[in-house]
Length: 175
Ligand SMILES: CC(C)(COP(=O)(O)OP(=O)(O)OC[C@H]1O[C@@H](n2cnc3c(N)ncnc32)[C@H](O)[C@@H]1OP(=O)(O)O)[C@@H](O)C(=O)NCCC(=O)NCCS
Image (cartoon, rainbow, N blue to C red):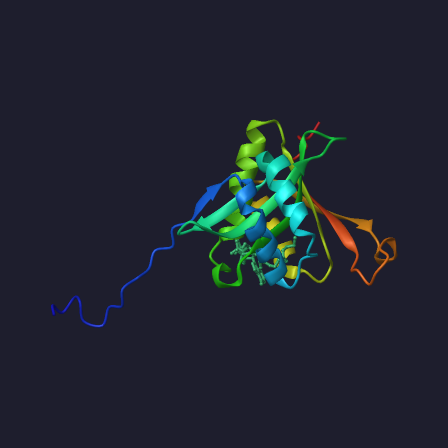
């Protein structure tokens, strides 16, 4: 063993691929959402349908051929310049490596090419990781980051947290 090899542990480089989801990913997206213990878990059907109908505005992060994270989104019908992000989740084992931020950047780059210049999402007040995630993406892209009340707790029939609207918007030039 040469002196330079002594005490050096092999390093693992994390290779993550980012791509549009397909119908075959629906089940795995549902699993990641269920495992998160944070997201509202919708029916397995809704994830399969989303991968079919909203693949253009959604993204999957994959390691060794297995999805480890996803973002589901849609183009807002009343404002086609806005990409509305519905859910973001990263498998517990992959958190803290920038996977969620990279998914949002890849998706936003794609959305920009189709005229979506703003990104909106809703986040509950206690979900600090998600607030930090979107704030970080806004900062990296030089976008305004604003919060507004959207759905109060009493909007929901069950004991759901409020959902605040977070907006990542291009800066309005000074007149
Ligand atoms: C929120 C979530 C998607 C973040 O995924 P991730 O891949 O670990 O996030 P990243 O590594 O890309 O981090 C992006 C930014 O968020 C910050 N962040 C991520 N997790 C955080 C935490 N637990 N506490 C504080 N900040 C956090 C990072 O520091 C980073 O900010 P920086 O660029 O200023 O350093 C992940 O924790 C998750 O799946 N949570 C459960 C589901 C959920 O709450 N989804 C959001 C609501 S739809």
